[in-house]
Length: 215
Image 1 (cartoon, rainbow, N blue to C red):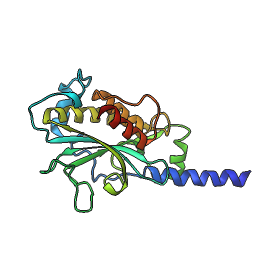
Image 2: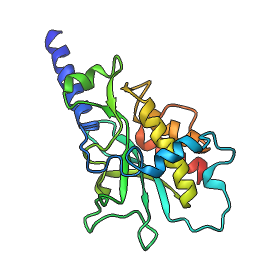
Image 3: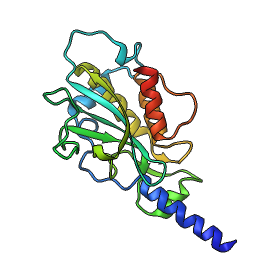
Image 4: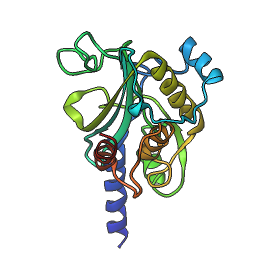
């Protein structure tokens, strides 16, 4: 029994570590906490929108976007949002290898603050300290399993940036069930006025359901 429990612990540690790895600053805070218009927007914009952003009719050009993403991992995957300016072809800006362009995009996603596998495993039992930036694999198209993009005008984008910034400040802990990467995305989607799945979902299924409900 002791050997069985030990093997189970090692397996959970590897799976958790592969799902959400520690972030770096490459894609963090491009538009949110370091942005002057984001700080102004947070003070002046009502985050409780009266109409869903995705359903608003406008004559303004949609030059920006938010994309809800799920990506592969050895376990159940990870989910995050990508913020940025569309490129000249109206697409998410990536390089020739399908990697997000630094300075043109920001990644926000909830995951444990450490790469220590024991802490990741502990986060399946009790909440652990979290961070809300980029994690390894978030920036590469090769790992994406599902995506739902909402194109935005500049004023709409400012609202969304303020929403994301607000949740980045509020989500301080991570728990695999009650306060996960999906919980973080659900909160953003709800404040944008989007319909969200009623039942709990793993990352890929959540993003697919989000697209189906709002597409």
